[in-house]
Length: 427
Image (cartoon, rainbow, N blue to C red; front, side, top):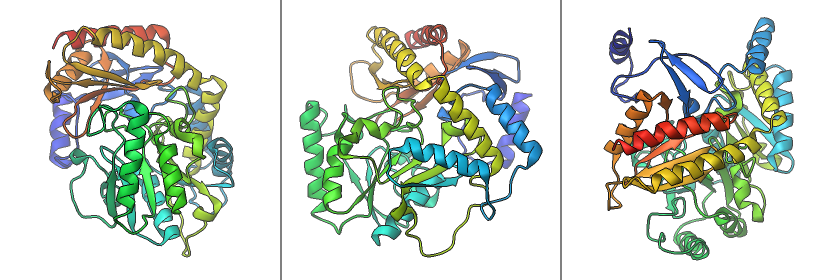
């Protein structure tokens, strides 16, 4: 049945639509931290639909909210008042840390980042944007144009002028040999030098932890130091929280809070986990920035009632069950376990990340040379052992990505770590 579905997939869908595994997997249902395929095999899910099933599969509180809302009305568009949208916007604005916050809901992180770029360039009246090397911000024409990851950038054409900044990857590149303080100082000096060669950009957009790039991040405080430089010149800071938001990193509710010394970002984008699988994205910005557009706009599907009901129920569950605290505690245990294993596996260059957002970078033993074949082999072996994980990486890097639902238990973390250990040792 799966082979037939794969053949049908290839007959009608694009060749560039990536699939995991030599024998692609059809997931038919899930519960908690587990999913099942069409052959009845059960898997512990350590990737959550690319960090999207944030709380749990088939979470009763969310499925009930969706069902009840669907029984009343599913959709009306933003041309009409929408109570669930207002209620979710109020809650997120209060949690955002941005003063006088306004929200605009979209259907994806790509669309959220596109909207943030529209706001920033309209507010600043300029089309130059700063972005981080190794970054990923979406698959639309605008967001591909600022993505600093060649593997996810199919064209050099762009509506924006993009300049790339050092700092998103701590352990590679020209400053990797420096300690954290000197690393930050060098990146800031590079930023200042770059700004001396160009007209003032509209904004810097950055992921606090780079997702597709392999869960890499700078030392805490880098973006706070950047913000001081940017603020002097009126340049906005956009924090792309599509993967880091809602407490996944454990220590903070938002990824930018590890860099909050100089105040919150001007704009925050979010998506993925807030809907627990329903299509929700959005932008948070100060009122003066959000209200700067001088033409009409709406969203047909952004903020639709059924997705907002899911988001409200999911956010309530996350806060009431302290899933941020669980990500910190269980993620810390999982990281320790994986580092102990990695010390005995020559292919592992680094275990990194925070909370339940962990990366394992793989290289050819004894070198710093990326080994994507090893990453694919571990992905396959983990699946055979009953575990689903992700992979990523940028320029000359290859990493495994581990991001389970944030309700992961200690026993499940141990189970997943044991499967991963066997998969890594099989290299």
